[in-house]
Image (cartoon, rainbow, N blue to C red):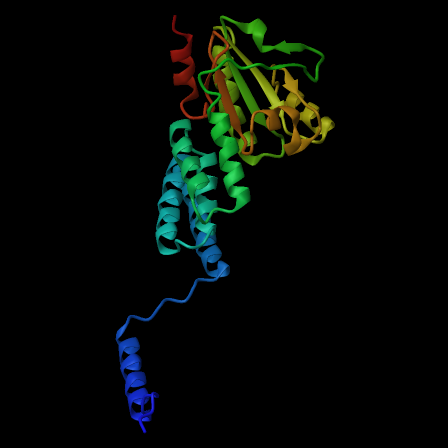
Amino acid sequence: MRFLFPSTARILSAGLVLALLASALPARAAEPTPDVVKVKIKAASDARDVIYKEKGERAALIFFNAEVEKLIVEYPTRPEPIEGLLEIAYESPDAEAKTLFGRVAAAPVATDRMRASAQSQLARLGRIGKPLELKFTSTDGRTFDLAALRSKVVVIDFWATWCGPCMQDLPGFKEVMNRFKDRGVEIVGISLDKDRAKLDAVVARENMFWPQYFDGLGWKNEMAVKFGIQSIPALWLVDKQGVLRDTYGREDLAVKLESMLKP
């Protein structure tokens, strides 16, 4: 009688072949844990802070960008490096930011929160080249209406007294504003503070002569939410026709204002 089952020898032989084949294949790398990736991102961020102090913001951002790109290649299945890319996008000039936010929105490993954030920022950048509406009563009782400032260049400063970079940049920012305030440039502040007394004290102490919008809601500030502000300081530049031209006005501000003032 013939049996339809393979012999024990044949089973053992087949098992041996499979074992040999498995041993010849390269070992599969273990899936990295979130902590491993986070540690590397933290190290890159710490190095970035050092570079910022020594060489400035732009050099620090370029360094951090290069490190994050390496981690994206090294850990393609982890969302943490994409979070780093999102952070870089918030601090990049408009053209670069648009590309980076687009990458985050399209990244398969991005979380829903990252993707939603990137899409909201793409909507913000989509405002560039379009008329902007902004009207409110300032903390000192003045009525601010962007529509009434046609023929003037307007600088919109999203900031807060608790924001370290905002306060660090303030002396240089005031110097530029003092140079341009009588040349057809208006400025308005959108404060993301919650403490009105502290805001008033800083405005008075620093002689910040421009109107301030304040509603005490912090990051939920009505204007910040309306315009998709998720990182400060942020400077928006509106041209003499009331059209938004730049949402990264901090870089080369004086040069940009000179260009926008030209007939």
